[in-house]
Structures are given as C-alpha cells and as structure tokens.
Image (cartoon, rainbow, N blue to C red; front, side):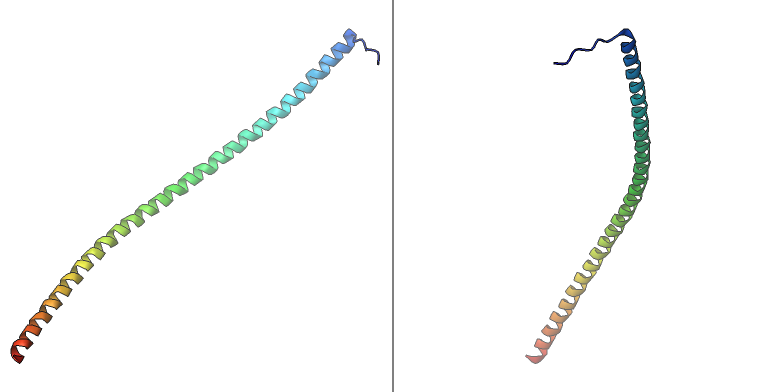
Length: 106
C-alpha cells in the first residue's frame, strides 16, 4: 500500500485555484456553444417563416383551383342538362316520324 499524501494549505489553495480556472474555461465553452445553438434556432425560425409564406401561396393557389373546379362542375351540369333535353327532343321527333311512317304504310 502506498503512503497517503498530506495536503498542505498551499497545495489546497493551488488546487482550488486550478479547479476554478478549469470551471471558468468550461463555463466559457458552454456559453459559446449555447450561443451557437441560439443562433441556429434563429436561423431555423427564419426558415420556418419563409416556409409559412410559401404555404400561404400554396393555399391561395388551391383556393383558386377549387373555385375553378366548382365553375367547371356547374358548366358540365348545364351541358349535361342541354344534352338530355336534346336527346329527348330527338327521340320525340323520331317517334313522331315512325308513327307518321306507320300511318302512311298501313
């Protein structure tokens, strides 16, 4: 077993000073790293603001597309209505023609 060393007041004072110096250095490094983290968060926040603006633009485009689709649906419904009416008119004329032809032939 090794003999135990005695710590003099001078050695303890030196040790305390050295520990304080190391903690001061460590705190400085930690502060610098937190400063860098804060800067990065600021950058990220700016990027998110840009992304929010782009999403607003996309929302506006989608609203215009939705409006256009609704207008097209209305136009298609009116076109369908006209086509059905035309089909009924053609069928009525054809039925009248067949009836007239049947009356002439009989």
